[in-house]
Image (cartoon, rainbow, N blue to C red; front, side, top):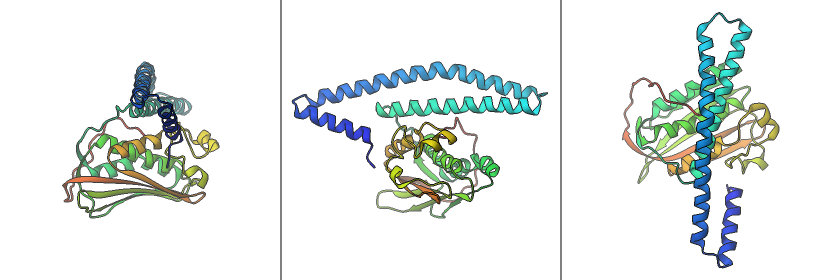
Length: 283
């Protein structure tokens, strides 16, 4: 899928090069512009995040104090959820501008793959139960337990994709399936998230991994989101030397498959519990 802004930039650079403008100079100017924008968004994000965290903190304090009526409790929950949504949006914008400036990097370490899959699925179990849909996860025996990678960024990708599937599915199920096949240079891992949700129109499919794009404006208004989640997922997966496939039929559901080449550190079953995780980012 071709990112239209990227195509426009390529055509502009090609035109300038044909006109005799040094391509190296143009590229340096584009990079400086992207870095300046990343710095600006980082500063804005910090300034906004501080009062938003205060709002979330005071909402949590009110919940702990108790003695609230059901209506007051619901209002406090809405305040906290709105604040958390704003923080996730700021994180998405910051990640995207970092990626454009070439500053989005991976922190390689050990990833307990089975734990991550179980954790990310469990995060949305309450919401799925509220909607009356089945949320399941299956892991093929060939999937390694421990791999080399960036656990936080892999979790970010999984939470975005699973979160979207639950968000846009009102009946039926969401199923997470992990598979692995040994390769010559690396084990090929695939993680599929399939749902029976609203699906995506064919005309919108080629835009779903572009920034600030959602399949339908009306659906975006009703379900929320800035249209950055899948774009960030695609960038992160590319950083991991992988890619994302998406297939969908409008009205019958969608399937997103993350393909990753991984280095296996341990392939035997483990029974370690899911550890407490850091900040989550789901679109």
